[in-house]
Length: 394
Image 1 (tube, one colour):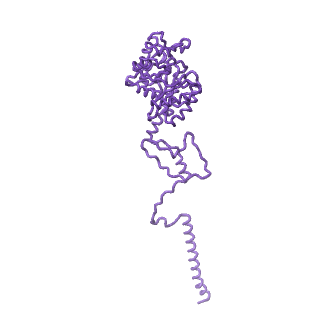
Image 2 (image 1 turned 90 degrees about the vertical axis):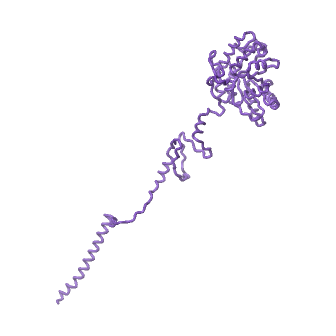
């Protein structure tokens, strides 16, 4: 064998190995390139699949949903579960939305029925129902006159301030002469306790507005009826004064004019009237008319010899007499209040009447702040009238 042939035989195996290596390298490179371009070549083969829950929304999305404005729920529809939010960072800015109040976590939870009932209450927990009440009026001389309702309800009961007996001695205070001076009248309405009864002049401008304001503040009210004093006409209570010199028809007409000036009062109180209240013939038809309209009456400063009490009982009138004049010893109102305390301890109830002088209002406010602490109940005049009437009952 020649040397040239030997060289060709020895070179052949080398060329084959080189070609095979190059081919393998090319195949591997092509496979890698295919994986990069086309994905895993074994992706089509069968494989196990694990269930993975969806990822929660990003924190900013969850917070945005939680802060969406709440909507009203219908009936017993359960509230949506908004989840628990992480506390805000220290540098968070508090934003207050218009018309949205912060939640008071300490406040009791109330049902929708309770919320509706609270919304239906008049402004202010002491407010009395606005007048006139249905069925308790009839047309009068330029206004409405009080009447007993078809169901037997009396204005004297319907317009009185409710009172809850706690077994304490009752003291009623009536502040009168209201409606003339706007500042004094406003102060009496707004600053005196709602249990204090207020008495208005029938000649006051805007009388119905004053009565409405007083009742909205919780005060029961009276209308003052001018009556003839002993020194009439030097001391003239007004053109519609009830007089002993005129007949029953004229006095009833005057009384109806006075009572038709406004509505919402539970009773009347005399303004002056020492002479008129001492005249049985003049007094009887007037008190009968007042009783027939379902009103109560309070006598202020009536002397013991007056037949007013006997005539009132005969007419079936609910009445009471005041025990002390708060303004009798001005400026010392406290001595009169102390006497009322003693009378209330002795009799279970007492009543005082005073004109709305600034000193009277000031000292009544100071006294009422301490009276309950000392064991007295500040009561409306209607509640003390009931006790006094009860003591007169046979």
